[in-house]
Image (tube, rainbow, N blue to C red):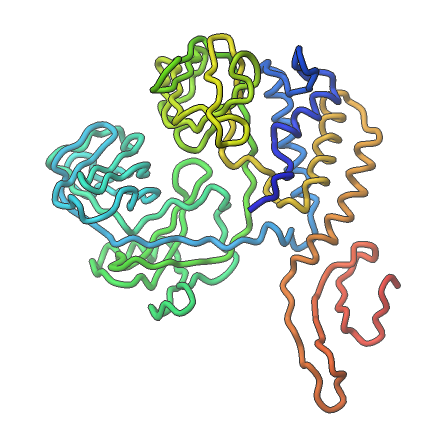
Length: 423
């Protein structure tokens, strides 16, 4: 969990806006805020993300330790069958009614292996357990499932969008699972396994391949027969931090709570569950709500309810002409709280360079902070504890860490005989 003082994207953009002279100000309190103008906010957002990418690219020779992550994938019991109904965005199989909980298959890839839509796939966005209805944006080929459609699910998993396509080590089951080994193999070899055999059980083969645009999927063999968790190391891939602004053209005064902006053009349910809408000006200023639905054709957002800034008290509903911002629920820079200052400085330097076309004190401040960031990151490296000392060894723990000495441009081992710090 991040501290409440963690640097949030909207505050970073406000400071950048003040630097280049495009900030808005509250007419009563005088408090600065990022601009609501879509052109200005898009420029600031682009520059800030460019700054973060620069920081990531200027990391240590072996990469940032904070970017070395573990991917966990929860395997689900596989299912297959024939659809008993469907639409352009759903497939139903009443044979599964009540077998699995709501959302059980969320995030898995449904594969059509017969009948209408054969060869097409869909990423499951919702699963209703009691009625066994799979919901998705659309089948990859645009078909509508019907009672001739047969499907399979449980062997293909959409990986988190922070995964860039390359695992950094072995794939394993959780410690103590007692399942047995699982190994990486080539994707074509795994498809050959699936072509020639139709077994179920505990997967012992896994592969990664692209899925859609800038995303990857994990496929396993055989189809899982039990719920298990597998893990593998990977390097974090930064996409972007996001923010969108606008002004309400209408708003509901009672439940169901809605805000309308007829100028929005994002796809249906683009903002559902993973976004919050916060009122930045007007009657409802300071109130926010978690988006539970969005309709492209009308520009109507539905929220669970309006909350005050403390997240507990009931907020003031917005009215037409109130300004708002849309934010992903998780909208923090990826390196973690300890790197907030260097991220702030690189973004200010980027604003200075790209929007004011100058490089002055912010660039120097960033470069100084980058050196401190290397030291912080080095402390994140794994350690191994050596011999506590017997015989001629000292009676103390020898903590060995191989790290990069940035002042000397070479690798050092602090336990190398004759090593002296700073020499």
